[in-house]
Image 1 (cartoon, helix red, strand yellow):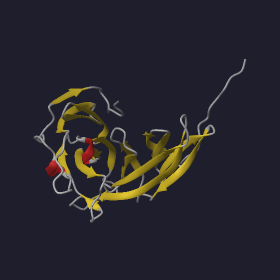
Image 2 (image 1 turned 90 degrees about the vertical axis):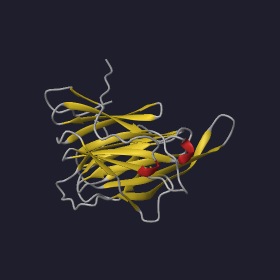
Image 3 (image 1 turned 180 degrees about the vertical axis):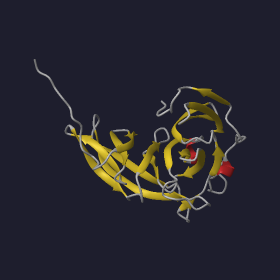
Length: 250
């Protein structure tokens, strides 16, 4: 009897804390963040993962990674987060050219730095982002994304990111207090013109937040003040999902 075993492919030197698929039409990448403080973008070719880009290292371990892409766009937003409440934003630009009636070939796959998230208060290396998720904002031609991160103090950090970037190279966001327990996982779901955020913590609770899902770009600038709709002050629903912590949501 023929049996096949897979022991995986070594991408990092230490434990991988988070990973996500980045779908770019003709190609699919894997974005990974690890305790080795590195973020890598890999492509699966010839039965193995090949690193195509290594992003600048974090000062401490990378806790969360995610991506977001507007429909039919060749550009994906990449987000990484970790210690000292760090959160970095990059753009993956993947373009293809038509070679014949039945096949396409990749001509360019480029990762560029967009901006960094900064908090007004000073943070220590033990004060960390645990998880981050992002989702496109409507309309698509705004080229904006909503990013939500959860930290070790139970706070939610919400940021609106434009693919056009800004001259400062930094961005700030708003803070929301969840349950006061460390946030372990987040999932975002679009519901018409709103975005529902499901937040799991170490207490075993899941809270549901209702955020605006559309944006009105003003003079080429896109930020939290451009969101169309009322920002929440508290979750719309909280329920006990587990007796221990909620480690993942999907």
